[in-house]
Structures are given as structure tokens and as C-alpha cells.
Length: 153
Image 1 (cartoon, rainbow, N blue to C red):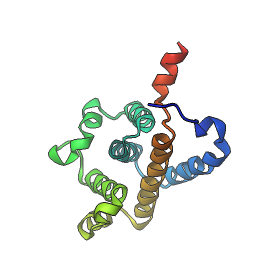
Image 2 (cartoon, rainbow, N blue to C red):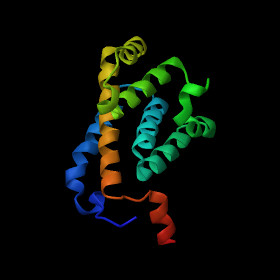
Image 3 (cartoon, rainbow, N blue to C red):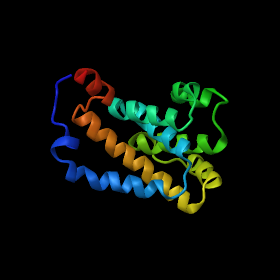
Image 4 (tube, one colour):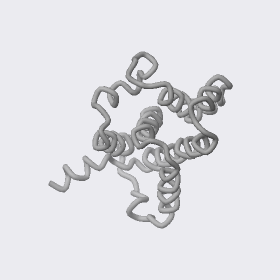
């Protein structure tokens, strides 16, 4: 992978409003573990190593189990996730893959059943934010933080 500019270092002022929006959305009451699952799932779909590294570690620090983090890409095939989490993960996939299938009514109906109106907006913003961060990470080849730490050691 060819090294590219790291916008978090070179142009942090341009990225900071996105970080601030993320903090605002986090204040709207979605469970921390649910938010981490959403961030990880979108990052898996988008292939964003820096976001997968960061959010997987954060999820574990927040008490998420190794099994649930590892099985996230196969969430439909397990009984590890509750209905609220399944609705959020389906919504995450729909919005992350928006050009392919749009936002199907059945997926929205599950979100509508599991989340209040305010939570639906917060969840949708969260998906948009992580997708934006994924595009920064993938577009600029931002390496996972653990790679920075290994190189520094």
C-alpha cells in the first residue's frame, strides 16, 4: 500500500467538525456497544483498517465480547445479537450499500419498531459519519493506530 497524506495530522481542522458531529450524535442516548457494532460493521463493509482497529478495541474496552466482535460480519447467522442490534446492523448495511439496494421498507420498519424517532435520526447520522470516516481512512490509506505504535517501538 502506498503511503498517502494523513489528513488527521496535516489538515485536522477540516476533519474536526466531523469528529464533533460524532460526539454530538453519541450524546443522543444510543447504547455505546450498539454504536460500536454499527461502526465496526460499516468499516468491515468499506474495508477501513484504521476504523476497524480503533472501533474493535473501543468495543472490547466498553465490555463487548470477542465472540460478538468476531462474528459481526455474520450477524444474521448467529443468535448473539438482540432485535435492536439486528435492526441497527441491517440499517447500517442498507445505508452503507445504498447504491445497491436503497433503504428497503422492511429494514426501515425494523428500525422504526426498535428505535424512537430521535434514535432513528441519531442512528442514521452515526452510519453517515462512520461512512465518512471510512472514506477518509481508505482514500488516504490511513494505517491502523497499532501499526503506528509498532513502527514507533
